[in-house]
Length: 496
Length: 143
Image (cartoon, each protein chain N blue to C red):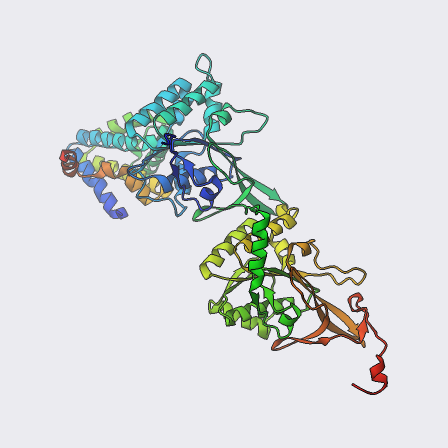
């Protein structure tokens, strides 16, 4: 028989938070929400409180010396989660500032105890904690010490069967605050300003007994409150599973929607693969991506495009627009410059589930890197890896385009070293033939599959990409200045 | 949700009820102070005594534009002194003027609070004060 105590988890209702916490907040836990001013502490506490408070599970919100309660009520009610029906019915606001100003720890504890007795709350929030600590420590002569106060507060709040949140200002690591050891959970909020962008992040420093998700999780505060984008986790599969996945994935091949390209890929793009289409500006990467999505729609495979590029109004763009407008293709179009990879992955994952999409296009990595907040650019490659892993875990086939600086001294596929991250690569180049720019395309890699190694000329027409024959009579194409190969013997004899 | 008019009406009705019809200035003064204490009692746990006092001083100041005799400059900064002056001045004038000034003060206070925290929250916090005495008694009589 298992007599271990079962810890009930309370789902917080903050999008993404329960995921980060490993399921929710343990009941009767004593948690600290900390962060510098303006990082969203009070908003997070309010959002959790409004989600959890019910007449059966009433909440008590103590305001201390932080934000004046009038202002807090004025501003917090702007959020859509602020439910007037819950105020006074299941949520009580209590102001403690007078007790803290005039009293000491003992008196503050007595006052809190009185309030606990009179309303028997299941949830208690104390905002803000550091101000209480500072104020009381100033007047603590002769009274119990700070550490004892916190210890007693912890015991009191758990003893009264409350799940408690203490909201606190920034606590520096060189100021080891006793509350850090007493607390069962520590949520740290932060905002980073880098150049002209601001990124909000949340970290679970501690949550007793919970399998929390490590790392910094970005979040946004909108009129609906806080939304957290849990950092994608890369799962470690056993070797067997990987092999099984590869076999399974490559069994089905997707058609690309460009005549002759499937043939070049060895029979189409294996489902679940990620394909990098690299090429210089104007070489036709987006057109290829559009064809891939349009073909998906034709085959009953819904697709999604994550667009970071401004595209001119050409006929194939209109095709794309029509498909998006008719809802056959999902569009994530973003021009913000403070994005995190996790936010995009979250939106993308939601949309993939909603549309049951199997094809995803990211156009382009260069635009993506620009849209990502400068603070994340250093980690771009790592985040890209995480994103591709998550998408591949969802079983979708991904096409990524990448701007390639046309350099003829070296053969490059991508500026991010992302080539090795993808399962397949198509490279597009310009070549000069008889003083004209021509486009060529080649399949560089298709993991675990045979594919064509030919370099083929192609043209872009109103109908899309038209792939021509292999360029047999030139060599040095990738260097950009091909030379005509000596004519074979058969030609000399005039035979075809 | 009560409209501004219905809330004003409730304030007027409450003052009349508490002062026994408003025919005696002393009764009006007493009703004003007791109603005020009820309001402060509802609000101070939430917004703090200081918050309540600040709003009271501001509404008294606004009301004194029409009824300058309600305030004494020497009372500034002391809520207790302001209340004492208010009670004495209300008790010392004609009942109908007293009732009008008292009504204006409580309306100003409620509307000031509304501009800060909005009508729904103000209503939730203060509606028990405006509840007709008869229905409050009925409610308490219920198990």
